[in-house]
Length: 298
Image 1 (cartoon, rainbow, N blue to C red):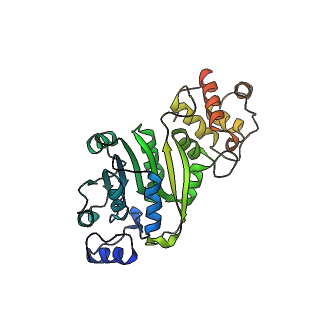
Image 2 (spheres, rainbow, N blue to C red):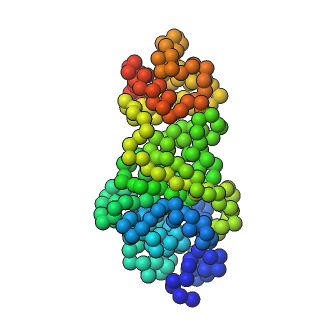
Image 3 (spheres, rainbow, N blue to C red):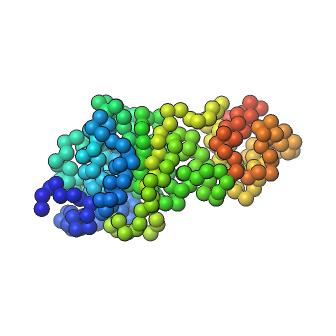
C-alpha cells in the first residue's frame, strides 16, 4: 500500500482506523466519507484552482483534505480532535501545501487565520463535512465574520440544507433561511445517502453551496435590529405577524400603532412570517426602526 492511495474507500478507511486504534466519538459528530463520487461533487462545487485557498473544518482522517490539496494552492484544515493529528500527518505527508491546525473553529480568530494561511491566495472557500450538531453556529460565524470568502460548500443534515435554501411560503422557510440568504446565495448540490459514511449517520445528508455575497441584497437601517425583527416574527409560527410583533415590541400597547406601521410597510397584519420575503422583512424592520422601535432587547 502506498501513501498516495485514496483515503476515501471503505477498505482504506477501516485500515487506517484499525492501525491507529481510533474510536469514534459520538459527541464530536464524527462520520467519515468513503465515497469518491461524493467527494468529487463537493470539491467540484467549490470551483478551486491553484490560485485559490480552501479552509476545511473537521478533516477527520483526511479524505476530503486529500482532494482539496490536489485542487487548491493552499489548504488549512482545523481539527478539534487531537487523536486525529497523527493520522492526518501521515495521510497528508505528500501535500506540503496543507496545514493542519488543532483547535475549535468556533473559538478561533478567523481573520487572523486567513491573514496567516491565505495571504497569497486570490480567493478562499470553506469546504467541509461539518459535524451536524454545530452546523448552524459554524456557518453563521463564517457568514457574519465578513471574511473574504468566495464559496462555502458543506455537507450538512438534509433538513437543515433545505431550510437554508427555502423560499417564502413553505414550512422549511424560516429565520435560518433569511439569515443565510442575507449573506449568501444557497444552492443544493446533491443529496447524500447514509451508505457513504463510516459510521452511518441516523439522518439524511446533503451538500449545499453558499455563494457568499459581496453585499446583502437588501438595505437595512440596523442589521442587528433586522434580525431581531425576523426572530420575533417567527417566534410562534402559527401566529400572525401582527400577534408575534405585538408580543415582542408592543407588549403594553394597543394594536393601532403596530397595524399603522405594518400598513406603512405594505404588510397585511393577518399574514404569517413564512409568507414574507427578505425584501419585505427589510422594509418592515426599517419602518419599525424609523418609528423609534429599534434597539436590541435580546
